Image 1 (cartoon, rainbow, N blue to C red):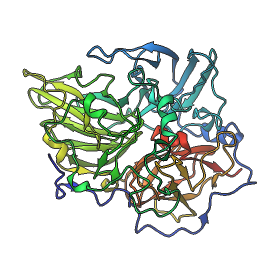
Image 2 (image 1 turned 45 degrees about the vertical axis):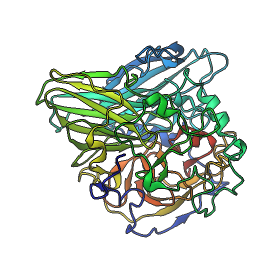
Image 3 (image 1 turned 90 degrees about the horizontal axis):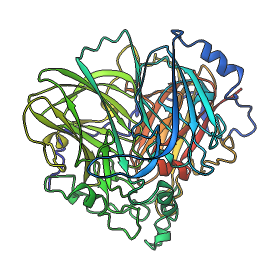
Length: 545
């Protein structure tokens, strides 16, 4: 068994950025009922769109959401839903300032509705793809055309924003290139990570139905649960005793399929006993039979072919629903250059921790041979695998564990934004405390103790005003980590940390972030664990009209 060398892992910043940040000038409770809110299709949204730099060029495409049998390799051919019959969907690439014109054609079965959310893009509000807040759901047999200017370069992806459709095959990368890019490299490789069960052990809807009963509904105990209270960390989580002896993914691990089903709980889908020191304890809720890199299982991996000495930019995207990945390229170090599309001061690391919805760009200089790119399913004793081939050599085993996985891992809060993207110093106009509440006992995940109401999405808005500097204090009252994603904006971790739209908040910890309210509308703030978000850990960040 391998354990993490505490001297080589920099953990201090994760979940506690901004401890010394400026105090806010005002405070907000997020109640705000009765306030007039900016309409997602109103004049303020149209005015903001006109101010975006546009090249005048259009990139047109059609996305057809259909049932499909896809090939994940090694004879694994599940039935799922996918864009144009493939997973991941085809990469979409455009230059900064181009207008994306994407027609979504919904050919899903029965009366299934869907949408497309352009994850990480600061776009016009009525194109954000979030029913019922920003648009009506696209009905089966119907189409909807998304049209917006993509004025910020970076690594993004797109996926549905209805139910738990994210955990099917409806996702694809979106790359916005900067023609003025100064980063020097010879090639690039887009790397999409995903946890997979659809069409293998069940469907995401079946998973959510089981999880929704909570641990108490499975006869897992009678603890009171945390709700928004102060629980001690044993009764409402999955149990975190004995963390010092936990398996952190050392050599000799079982096969990914066997490991993924070794949770030990009585449910078909609920995962028990998955723990991670990096994530503060409980690592995840769901048993996954496979972990994919670029749509391939570890037994039949995707292969990047290159030449020794070439410098390659990896654009790493976690499109998963319940799994954080620790990523390393055997025999190489990686230089972090961007996170969530925004540049950071370059930092050399052995491995990355990537939560759901996060993206990291890294540079690697390729060695000579065959090297495993491993995405360790954090705390779940399973992994995804891809290969880098630059010369002769045999393919490593599907369960290979490069030494770099236990090397130096720098967390997001310890990265620093580059000067050109760091927020300008400004007085904070309002602070909102965003309490993350709930737990596994009753599966009652929520923001500020109130589950999001899809029938009345503006019932409990978190109010902001255009032109103001806003501070969010994420306070995690739960025994589990949450990757918190803000639509339509990027926030800065603390006063000098990276610019991000998705950040990990550790259990029982606080994370302070800042952003400028410069994109009017109504925007989702939610946990990017698909099942936590669907259960209610979601809120409407709304601009006052």
